[in-house]
Length: 129
Image (cartoon, rainbow, N blue to C red; front, side):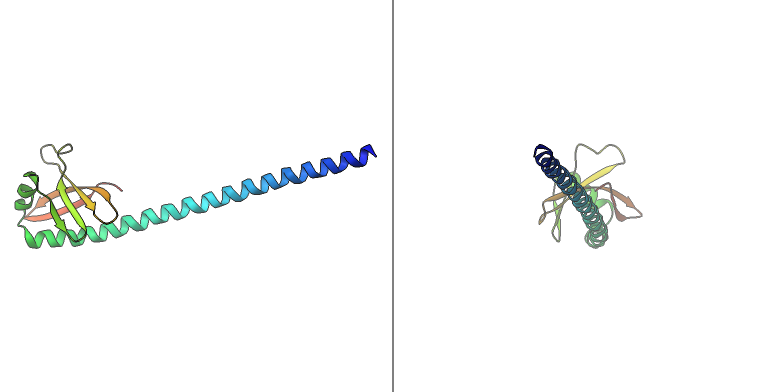
C-alpha cells in the first residue's frame, strides 16, 4: 500500500514540475515575442520620424532663409510645424553645434535634432531615438 501511494505522490510531483517548466518556457517565448514586436515598433517609429523630418526641413526652408531660422531659435522662440513643436536646446549647444528639441505634441515624445545651415539651406539631422 505504501509503495502505491508513494508512486502516486511521485507522479503528481513530476506532473507539477513538468507543468512549471511548460509555463516557464511559454512565458519565455511570449517575452521574446513581446520584445521583438517592441523593437519592430521602435524601428517603425524612427523610420516614420525620419520621413517626417524631411517634411519639416522642407517647411522650414520655405519659411526661413538659412541662418534666419537659427537666429529665431536662439531667441528662445518655438516653431510649430504640423504636430511638432521645435525649440532650441540651451544645454547642448556650443560653438558650431546647434541642437533642437522636436516635440511630438500628440504622443508627447521628445527627440534631439542637430541643426546645420549650409548654402542658406536648413538641414536637420536626427541624433538618436
